[in-house]
Image (tube, rainbow, N blue to C red; front, side, top):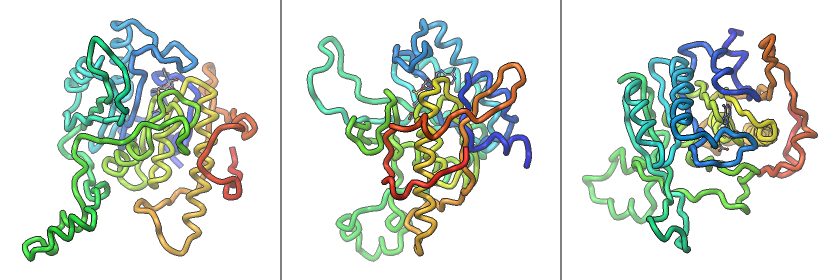
Length: 316
Ligand SMILES: C[S@@+](CC[C@H](N)C(=O)[O-])C[C@H]1O[C@@H](n2cnc3c(N)ncnc32)[C@H](O)[C@@H]1O
């Protein structure tokens, strides 16, 4: 097993810029990340409470630490808001090629809100690539046409048309509801992103069994999406309580995959292929040695979507 393979499928309870130094250059297929937006959120640390100039300087530092890790075919998705996306997109355009600006419409209902501006109800996502030869699998993320649309296109000129059979391109405006408190997917993290969105990015921009890097894991949505889609992951998170949430979510995801693997037919598009347990590790700053730190007991009380019956123990 190579050094980089030892790092994969692990969550490091560590500062991203420090941890990124251990990831070999050119080993990552996709960087998919949702960094602090600079809006003052409480993540149990001060990471989102920097002044604008400090925030932008720090953003440039982590970008420069992360981009060399990408393969020449690699891509980056970054979640931002209108507040700093102009500055950060310029930084990235100086280093990569911009392919899309995706608007995530969080489907916020109309109720009160701002009185001196229009209520902001979207996040801005940038898709950047390292070279023209970037990996992109549109067929993996096409949206199937409904029966009525297919029927309306039943004239002979449409019969056998690939786009009609495979579905349509998801376009760059994604209307997906944010996760409500009572949503089965929701855990205790203030800015958890929906799996539906992250899985679309993973399927489109990371080959099967490739590696997804998320320097700012939060509740671990990127890691869970990677596992569910048969990809590997590596990532960092400062807050140890969020690391416990990630561990619990990974255990549930692995259990779900085992249940699916034992079924006679294949119910999901991305084949779940990984059997090895994922680990959460703490890094000793002096020796750079990593040790698993989180026990199942610590993760107790974390809401998961898998029924107790189907949860199996994983080694940590
Ligand atoms: C916007 S949240 C990510 C949410 C995530 N996408 C999800 O779905 O749960 C950003 C996370 O980055 C973490 N963070 C902030 N600064 C960090 C740093 N220097 N290194 C590692 N993690 C950091 C925060 O604790 C927070 O949980």
